[in-house]
Length: 164
Ligand code: ADP
Image 1 (cartoon, rainbow, N blue to C red):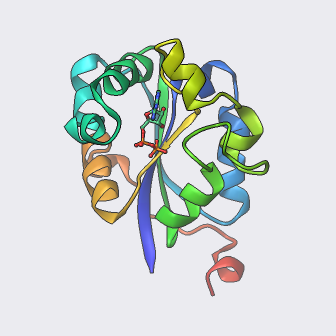
Image 2: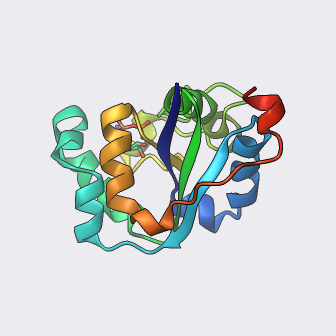
C-alpha cells in the first residue's frame, strides 16, 4: 500500500552537512519527496512532537534531553511517499542506538555512540534522523509538521519502472 511518512533530519545531521547524503538514499530507492522544508523549532513545538509517550517509554530525563537536542538547531522536515514507506524508511535509518545500528543504515554509517555512553554523560543519543514509527504516528506527525498546501502531488518519471 502506498503510504506517507515524516522524516526529520535532526540538528546534528544538518550541522554535519549530511542532508544531501541522507536525502539521496531515499530518492535512490524510488521514494518520492512530496514535502520538504527547513525549520527551527522551539521547545513548545518540540513537546508536541516528542509527547509524554517518550517519557513513558524512555523516562523523563531522556525526553528532556531530547527536547533540548531537537530544538538546538534547524531540522529538515520531509514528507515521503512510497509503498510501505513507514517500514522501509525505518529499515534504511537503522536501530535507534547508533552502536547497534548495522553498517549500511544511515545511523550505522554516520554515528556510533551507545545508550550507556549517552546516559552516563546525561546526553541525548544523537542519531541524525527521526522517522515515524507507525501509521498513527505518521498521520499525527505529518499533521503537526505540514500544512495541506505544503504537500505536493506530482509524478516522478521513474514511477513507470519503480511502481508499475
Ligand atoms: P526512534 O527515534 O528510533 O523512533 P524513540 O522514539 O524510542 O526512537 O526515541 C526518540 C529519540 O530519543 C531517539 O531517536 C534518540 O535520539 C533519543 N533516545 C532514545 N533513547 C535514549 C537514551 N537511552 N538516552 C538518550 N537518548 C535517547
